[in-house]
Length: 271
Image 1 (cartoon, one colour):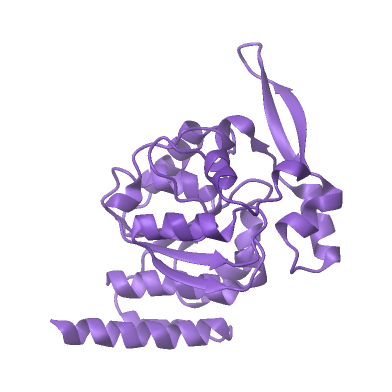
Image 2: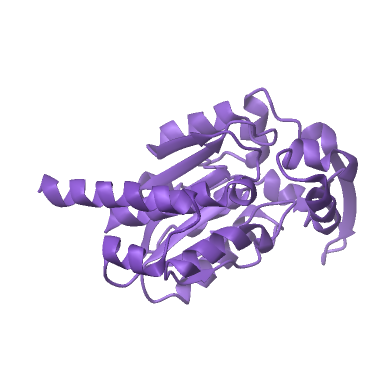
């Protein structure tokens, strides 16, 4: 019983090395895992959009994986999770859910009730327990610089009340969000950032899917949005397979090889 597991482990390590160097091929992935591959659903967080996964998507597609990176509405925890859950409903085969930042809150809730979700992958993301919110977790551990960098903008709601969106001040965007990316790139990211609704960031999470679905966690140790200690706490609580890397919050952009390797490791372990 142990031999197949050890073989899969060795294969996963080999693929991880190839992915980190950016040279993993579809043929190599087929030789390692065999059989049909799960659809990888990538869920972005606040202050970003799905294009932040582009380098990861390219690697996964090169390895023969179907990939979808839907637009997370970023309005409220329950609604965002319901939307991503509806996307999963349209996928007939196995699924791996991977998320960045607030997207981790969403997959923690959206995965519930889906027997085809094989693994959860947290890439510098929140993995809340029931009743917790993203803002609550970030405030419990020192190190987050997000609060002081937020700019509030109000918007009308259908019932006549107002909601509040949080943007990162463009002058602070690179230092807080993506310090290891070139300034020319972060200027564009700051201008095109999608705001996070306070209703979403402060919304209470439901029963966590990580209680029943295996999880993997890539922790960026230079994260100034979600303190690394907060991520270590969440990863340990969820029983996640953990790797740490010297990276800013946007680990999927600055270290796409490591992010991809984490997803491939999850796939190899669930075969």
